Image (cartoon, rainbow, N blue to C red; front, top):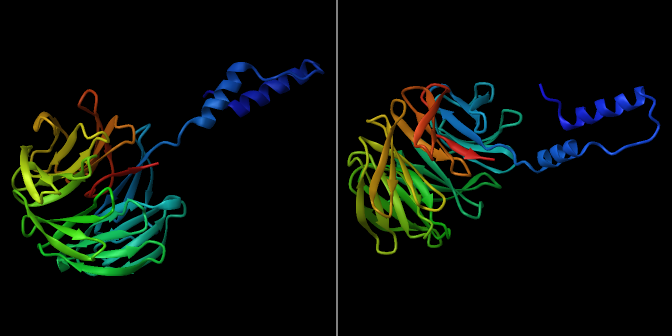
Length: 340
């Protein structure tokens, strides 16, 4: 094993003392450079994977693609975990659909800090661009709950016009909240200032995962029964295109510059790589069984995809467009969220 800079310096000083050298010298330049580089190196991005049936969260180091630890809050997370978000100070917000709760989890201590009752059948959660509001999609109640993360209380309940809202996404400017309504094949457009839905946008069939393009008005939506990714013009309030993907398209991840859309196809066991400008698929990559909600690393070099029926996470190199590894996780992983 290579010594760390601190150990290398200690060994060097000891050698000088043993040789009877009285004068002090500066450490070798290469050690100083190593120490400087180590101090500047960013912390590795971590992938968090909620495992629905295990009631656990796998934590993966995206540099090494190794599971660092498995969180369970001493078995108190419930056995139907849904979407999670990364909050401040190493905390996670996770939906426990079995216990009808939104939980705040301290990852350092693996301990539940707070919980709030959100009722039955919640699945999706999103955080506002300012970080001062959480939105929970409660598909069994046809409503969205807005939660103050500081007080951890429900501030508003907004009924949706569509049925079974599953995923939520904020517009980049924080003015709008969209819900994908799998029961009515449409999206609700919620005006957050007014606190109400202003209408719905029809989609091509069973909308699920969503992502905003960098322009702030174009939205990509996975369509599970249409086997496609819809392109939505939010300003015009309409669907402008449907891009063919694989069987049972469920989850989406978007490159930071908007140049690629990655769509997981639950029925095909693949990920479609889509050029949204050309509106066509560039490749289809085989992964595990029933891939669900994917996520990209901050540098965009790797894509992580939860394989719900394989109990694994696939790692895809976005340059070669090849699966480079499958990482074993818990029972029925819901998706992946990545943060530093």
